[in-house]
Amino acid sequence: MPAQTAFDALYASLDDDVVASGSVTRPVPTPTTGETLHELPQSSADDVRDAISRARLAQLAWARAGFAHRRRVLLRAHELLLERRELLLDLIQLESGKTRGQGFEEIFQAASVTRYNALAAQRVLRGRRRRSGIPTVATTRVRYRSKGVVGVITPWNYALSLAAMDVVPALAAGCAVVQKADDQGALSILALRRAFIEAGVPEALWAVVAGPAGEVGEALTDEVDYVCFTGSTATGRKIAEKAGRRLVGASLELGGKNPLIVLDDVDPERAAANAAHACFSAMGQLCVSIERIYVHRAVAGPFQKALVAELAAAKLGSALDFDADFGSLASAAQLERVTGHLDDAVAKGATVLVGGTPRPDVGPWFFSPTVLTGVTPEMRVYAEETFGAIASLYLVDSEEEAVQAANASEYGLNAAIFTGSVARGQRVAERLEAGSVNINEGYRGTFASVDAPMGGQKQSGVGRRNGPEGLLRFVEPVTISATTGVLQLPRWASEYREQAPLLLLLARGLAALRRR
Image (cartoon, rainbow, N blue to C red; front, top):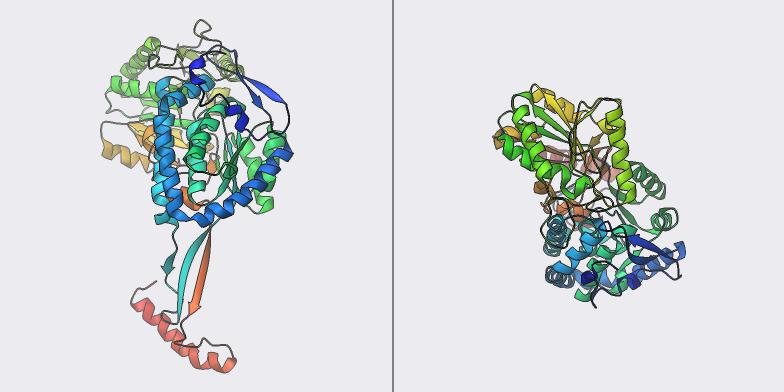
């Protein structure tokens, strides 16, 4: 087994934490060498249903334990994540092929999400008074009830941080979680879960299953009380349809074809360095990474020259240290997808500015960060999400043209603006059709803002992670009203006849006072 350093005594039995009653396993390779990293147990539909049943029982006690108890447990989990960061980083790299620096972003995000939800849950979800329909005659309160068992389906690309962004707020809200881990990211998720279990989360409260989507995923979405999904728009639609038929809620973070606008007042070299990271962090295998660059013609020459120089000089690798700038694609399938988009574009007339070649000298699925020009609508890379190692560069003559081009997509997940004036960037951001917009950064400003909602518009999904909105996904509001006895509300015709003028006077008085 390669890089044995990640598999010390603490993590040697992680595969045993998968809920799987049978003996079927699947070999999971590491992108660093293509060799088998571990044998992952595969769950069945019955395993999923058993996990959900146990989670329902555990959730009752967890919800009754209250905010203070959940806060203590989650804050302890936060500390364990930081203490175990090196081992977690090893696992992230071995499973995903990304660099240690890009893996560190996952650790930082997971820790931030954990601390935020531990501290914010009571403030956001505690019951509070609301204005009643008739002041003094009735009082009204709203309380929040945990939804029950949440199904979380997470992808391989940012397995640890994306798991935390859905699982932790669900736990903080008093829910249980049954999570389907993608095989390629299961170890990172299991290691994350292990830290929470050791911090005090009951084992049955957060169960992890693995296996084919057609069996395991279907069984999960058939039974849970709420669904969180991160993945493709096509699969997200299917999950939304099923959730709709069952009348349960769902939050879906789906595909993107994220644009970057480079305005004419930038420092070209600085903008190029930031663009390189925005496009090729995790080799573009990130839902919010940039795939379309719209650069103002006035700075296009120096920007393009600097971008090519940055990417040509970048070091590829996935060693367990901070030595490489960019890592590997995650699988043979990802390499095939990237080369397919590239070959199609070049055959139809696109030009490769930089990159465009596999790098088997570094590892089996490494690919040079690639920037194309001359991309036209008949090419797959023009509108389809590549999700890896290719960005397209377009010239624009005005800010207005850039905004129109950026918005001309069925997707609306993330966008970025590079400018010498933050005030100008703010004005442009107001006009972009995206769930998050970053000024002078590719994605990390909004991604790391755990007190602010994150999600997509158009075909990029529904619902929001993070912030109060991310917590409110996992509760049902319950309105409770009580009459005070000051006045008997009308019941019979004679009572309505007498009280209607009084109620009308009250309505006009509230309007005059501009009271809600």
